[in-house]
Amino acid sequence: MQFRDYEPATDREAVRRIWRETGWLREGKEEVMDLYLEGSRAIVAELNGEAECLVNTVPGTMRYLDADLPMSCVAGVTTSRIARKQGLATRLTAQAVADDVAAGAVVSVLGMFEQGYYDRLGFGAGSYEYWVRFDPARLKVDLDPRVPRRLTVDDRSVVHANRLDRLRRHGACTLTPPQGTHAEMLSSYKQSFGLGYFDGPDGRLTHHVWFGVKENVEFGPYTVRWMAWQTPQQFRELLAIIKSLADQVAMISVREPPGIQWQDLIDRPFESQTLSRGGEYEQRIECNAYWQMRICDLPKCLDQTHLPGDEVRFNLRLTDPIERFLPENAPWRGVAGEYVVSLGPSSGARRGADSSLATLEASVNAFTRMWLGVRPASGLNITDDLCGPPQLLEQLDCVLRLPDPKPDWAF
Ligand SMILES: CC(C)(COP(=O)(O)OP(=O)(O)OC[C@H]1O[C@@H](n2cnc3c(N)ncnc32)[C@H](O)[C@@H]1OP(=O)(O)O)[C@@H](O)C(=O)NCCC(=O)NCCS
Image (cartoon, rainbow, N blue to C red; front, side, top):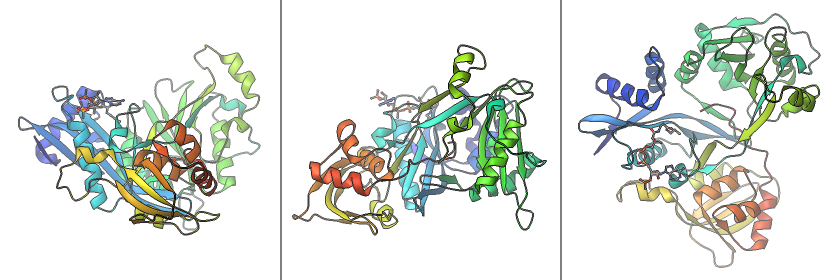
């Protein structure tokens, strides 16, 4: 079994076959897959001389409060029909994460197909994401939008730049290579389009919304694939644009943007849900926790962690399940070990132990969730692999009072 870099010249047909077999590649969309891979670091596992498992990762950043941490996103994990259940995808993903750590990533993020699989590699579930399906006629916005500019795939560079520039809150992820945005614009929607405003001093795109329509262009549903804005006024103008489609479009779905409670924006939200229940245009809010993250370099993550409140110092005994899937002699085999950790205005982690301090025992999965603010230490102590004396858990609950982390980027 050989793990190696993806070589477009010789592996292209084999990796297309993998994606066709997993249902990820439709006829005629081959160049979209090429684009995704062009903007990725891709590695393959070879079986009988052909690539039969493909893992691709994309570099980016993750905002932790006001700091930007170098991040790697595991964007695709796929095994062909003849190579399943041999541990290829697990080991290749572990290898991809290790390679990205060597390239500077301090956290890794991914979208999971099911809970449990990536737990074996140290990833912990993120917080809930909400998807709202609403009738745009019910949007509460009292603003007449100016005439926006149409955005098409030809505007991909400015659209990508505007996405990178958007207002980013705690947990916001950004995938840096432009090919990702380009590929998303070309992806499997029947119709995709954007509307936006070029209000920057040099005529730059300042705010926009990008839609995808799966089937019914006439009546919807339309999906808001993403929004990029920096000021409340810009956000309101995008809402007004969405509302302006209401005479024709009966339903729009959107992932709730960070910091916003979309239900506030709907006129009589419960009535609209009751009246539409069971119908084709049923309005509702759904949620699930589908993304996962893991710390890959604890000292570097904590160097960038600045929390209000009193400092908490403790011993950390950290386990990391990824090591089982990496070679014994690999330069990086996770972050397991004993650390002395401080969390506060200036935080840090150094290897070792201090007998005067209380000890927290945790998997990197659970510790990442606590550090991000997905759930407090006292809750993870009940549902996840994290335990310590009650007084320490209480102090951790206090110092890690963080906003709900939201990647605000689909992956
Ligand atoms: C998911 C996928 C990549 C797995 O590929 P694979 O090479 O067969 O995976 P591996 O052999 O490394 O891992 C399989 C193991 O994971 C385990 N596993 C699967 N789902 C799990 C879960 N939710 N929790 C814990 N373990 C899980 C299996 O039981 C199996 O263990 P076993 O061999 O001891 O029985 C493959 O099924 C695929 O390509 N699916 C379609 C594309 C997709 O959904 N990719 C994931 C995107 S996030």
